[in-house]
Length: 105
Length: 300
Image (cartoon, rainbow over all chains, first blue to last red; front, side, top):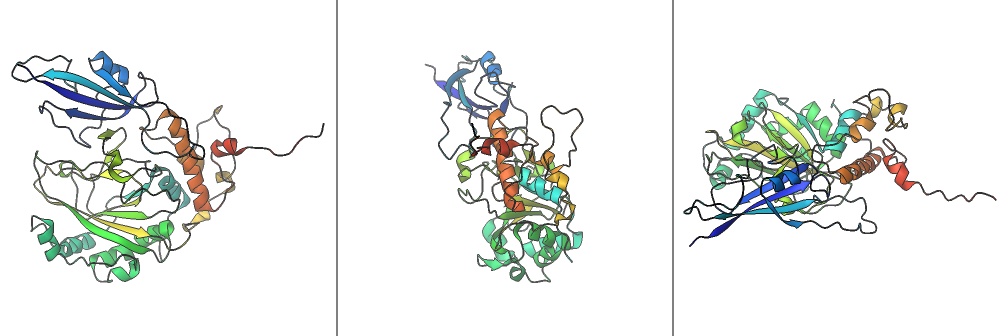
């Protein structure tokens, strides 16, 4: 019996297009093989969101485009263009993986 | 005599949310601070606090009353350039909100960095506090110097709600000589690193509140008419002066989104208007354009 573990990649892009540049990111590895944390890299794992797709990451969520509230048009806060990706990786004992390369490339 | 900031420095603070002075605090002050901090002896905060001669200060104490003149912190805040920067940013009579000695003990590879966050809580004011980050000894790359993201200070977020942003393009990590001082806007996103060296890392943080309206508190003698007038935009044949106030306020950061990067310019301009006390100021027409609502009706 194999157990699948999830690897999660979160990319923040320069605009709502998946082929726009990565401006921030996070990686969480449910297999426990890798440990990622704040400030651990200064270069993004992919240049664009499309680059992640081409490397086998499955897009599972994209932030919606929201109207700007009246009076709030010029307030900035959280990064707007958030994309969640996943890879499902089989239990380490089997040595089988369903995804592509390691998230750090 | 105090040495106030100039207008280019203030504009840079308005745009990027910090001013950094590497190695400017004299070595004797740094050494005295390390001695008064209790040295690297105890391996936990409780022991360190017991050893430390850094005073407890009630919130709201005037800064100049908080630290005796013969102590390291007293000498630090009385340095003419430190006092000048403080008074340029938060004015005379600023209050100690709080201070804290941040200590990072060596953790090897097992340590974990601090999530990126904005201090305190959600804070939509134009009025701002400053945070002095004082690095009394050299910080090498493996010591986990404070990480910060230039230009994030005007974003209205709620403390560690931004923790998911593990890394942001353009983030900086403090690597510095002894005696480095950063004056940061309270909204600057930041977080502590992990210490993979064999040396305990210290950083003293002091938050100051203004007691006066933050308007033209710096040395404005370098402001000229050219800093207030509009200049050609988009179709520009010659290179721009990088030190022009408009250039400083409209220089993007690597993490800027296409659309909100422009809103950052607008918010910086409105912040600069607040600092100047001049609601007509604009840089490269960003605000004039969206405020233009003519009311006169032409006669037919």
